[in-house]
Length: 374
Ligand SMILES: *[C@@H]1O[C@H](CO)[C@@H](O)[C@H](O)[C@H]1NC(C)=O
Ligand SMILES: *[C@@H]1O[C@H](CO)[C@@H](O)[C@H](O)[C@H]1NC(C)=O
Ligand SMILES: *[C@@H]1O[C@H](CO)[C@@H](O)[C@H](O)[C@H]1NC(C)=O
Image 1 (tube, rainbow, N blue to C red):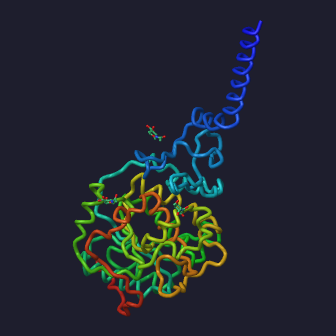
Image 2 (image 1 turned 90 degrees about the horizontal axis):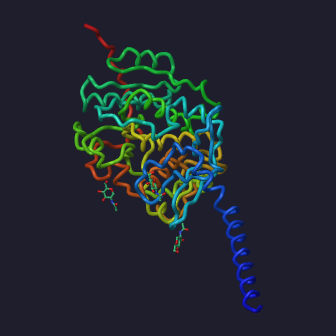
């Protein structure tokens, strides 16, 4: 009698335990397992693949889809902070067609191509035209007259546009602001630059983007090209150091969309967003995907209280916020640092001898020569 009671008790306990386990797994693991098993996770975090964090497990809440498709796209930028994953706020799915059009929606579908000699791309509005002219002179002085230069008109007057159109091996292109929301027309928030770089990579597998203030000082860049080509450094390289941390010059509100490890952001150099070597690979296209998503979201690229001018406190350039913001440059530095485990030598040219400088006031008043076709 006592033995059978004991057996009954044991069986009931086991049943209760089973129910608890089932309930627990229903509540906690079922949606996650479901997500992984039944959806085709097309995206993986490229820069991290093969490392610990693996984005095939991105959260269901971050998913965006094309119409009539069951492919999931991840619209939350996520990072690892102190061993746990932190998800950024989801970007609006309405930008999916834009990413698609720019060919940055599916980074891991990008085929890496052989490294080719890069073209030079730049652009300016009227107020920087004299600097841009001096940039062209500088490119010609170091690399000769043959490299292709693509010049983007961001608001030139007729004479300036005519001068560019008439120069040898300089291609004039007018940036089409009309194709984008009105906020892109505000040049001071640099949304246009992220779009322009994305447009360029559709057409060119390798290019330099150089702001009008860049002046070259070396004529051979083979060391850098070889390193990119071999994969010793990454495929989205910043060049000029800002000599302060990413943290100092980034509006903290940006971290809501682009989270970062704050301690590391205070120790990581910020690099200029206006001087980059781009080679189209899954990793560099992924950088553009997040950069454009941020650029299209006001609260990411240009959150309230964003000011360009920094006010460093007590000469501290690293650990304290300097009440300033660098828009696209802040965003790209967060993205690059995160995707490359904060290893600057992988996403910048810092291990190479300096080959250019930023000269913001260097202007040329001599018109570019008209091209004489023989
Ligand atoms: C990451 O993805 C790879 C390849 O898809 C897979 O083999 C590996 O188990 C994943 N790692 C983790 C931690 O999920
Ligand atoms: C990470 O952990 C360390 C030690 O526990 C802590 O001091 C630090 O504030 C944490 N960093 C972040 C960004 O949470
Ligand atoms: C950082 O990247 C460089 C270049 O790929 C590499 O040589 C170096 O070992 C890396 N450093 C660390 C700490 O992983």
